[in-house]
Image (cartoon, rainbow, N blue to C red; front, side):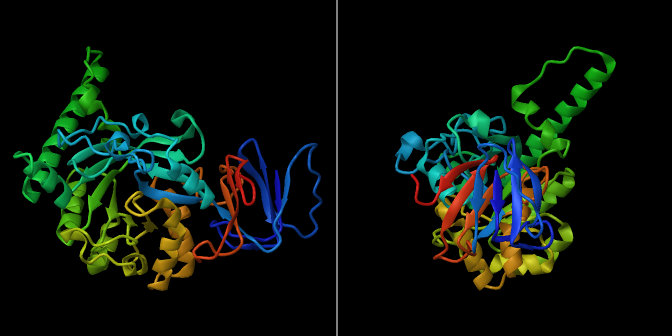
Length: 390
């Protein structure tokens, strides 16, 4: 397939005016300026002419619960939190994602081609996130990376859930202590397994601990639900104690400690700012947070936390962040290449480069502006949405 004309925002260097792009077998094979190029489409090869539109990488949602907390389904469609045990690292998002959730179609219509999807924040350890494409019937076919992160949560949510059941954790101290204890168990398991394998001894794998090995080996990060300053610093403290990678998800009070977070080096996924301040720990939530963190040197992405706010509002959330001080180009990066890098999949998505997945969104203009329309959404080189065609 050829895409010809328009402005190409590659997110990998300079924009290309009046450019062209070619895809084959789900990958980008050519990209450049149209001047002087001779196009020779193969028989039956599709050509999309874009005159005044904007061509950019498919938008990425870096944190959501799409397909796990289904819209309009109530308890029957809510598989987000296993609220009987505060430590459930062995739960896998792919086992709960319903790709028939209407949110997947909404995402595609908004030019969102991939998303990090996983459990909620009721547990100290909630389970494993997966990074998925947004179009398809069988979840196994949508996987880009799974597991992609291990969800942990600090602060209000685990406290409210378990103090109401009359058991731990009912304090922030207990949340931190339970996570440390779990990590100590996982480290001991890892040492014992390595020792046994090195000596040729028999070793019985433990399903509840095997899931921690990619975290301990720094192959995937902790995905830390944090809003308040104290919870952010507790998450940082524990990640440093165990030498783990981590993303700071929500990070609602991050703007109050931006320089400290920049020095620590952990990226932030900010939001959902397009939601009510319905909890004590989100009282300082604001669209200015992502810009302040970004200017301080923190790599930032933006999230809707769907269904807390609707996934199709993701580009508009980036626009509101730009309105509140985030640089415009950083607004584009926060929903493309920064999201990809933070989610550990920048080798495949997040920018338009030869060899990467052909995940492309074509708009009438800047998608961060409310009247902009999606013209085409392309995933793995296939047109999955075209304006005017249902």
